[in-house]
Length: 369
Image (cartoon, rainbow, N blue to C red):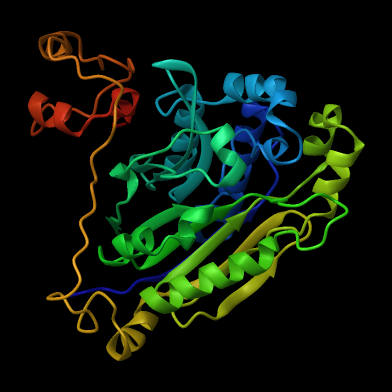
């Protein structure tokens, strides 16, 4: 029998402590505790929340941002690092599911970063690790391409959970790949601002409107609840970017701000959206609300033509090199050949070969608690 749980969810419309990973983790843990106290079973944080979205990349030439990139690289956590462990512990302690965006570093390179998102279960286990498949526009100057390993939906006690990062929510095939896995709750993450034109020109990207269109479309097409978590632009970001100059800061101030909100399977907003100031956005969701809309229009069920349309998604994870001779060494010391992270090996039911087949360098190390 299929169950359709109902529960409260939260979107964290919060600013990071810009380029300060430890203080941002503190703030995230406080928000996790607050959401749990208020009865939420799931909380979603913004894109690249840890240690802050690199908005400096969009307002001055790349030749002027080397110092900011170095700061970001130094503050970027690893997926198996102590910062992420603190978030996992907080999720476990407060019995709440957590989705959080972060700039991810790797032991395989000191200059390669990814725009990543983790889904953490209420028991502290990492359920999914997604790297943005294509950085958007000037983000290509900061982050590397991700892969398809994170295009997965997790079947949990609170429903089937999926997630995409910012511009991925405009990618029809990425969205369909999640809908086709039975997604019921979708998490979409965004930065606080996204300037695309100089201050003295009209037509700057309306981030709030773009978010509303994307989120509404995905909810309506997939018949899912969408939790939108966008960041807030605050004084810590302004102060950290003083060196960009007055024109750049004025552009960031004037750019349209993002919105955090929750949308039901008909595409309607539920709860109170938030654009200004910091806070948590709450709403009650009931997964049974998707049943009737699915009966009317189910794009992965009867409303598909499987004899006409075919989609193949490569869910393999990429790594810089394959070290065949390392198979025996891993068996001896239980370490990853590239990333040096604790492996996903269960003593009872997981073989070394299975582990190697599903690992990706440093990404092999999402450890079981």
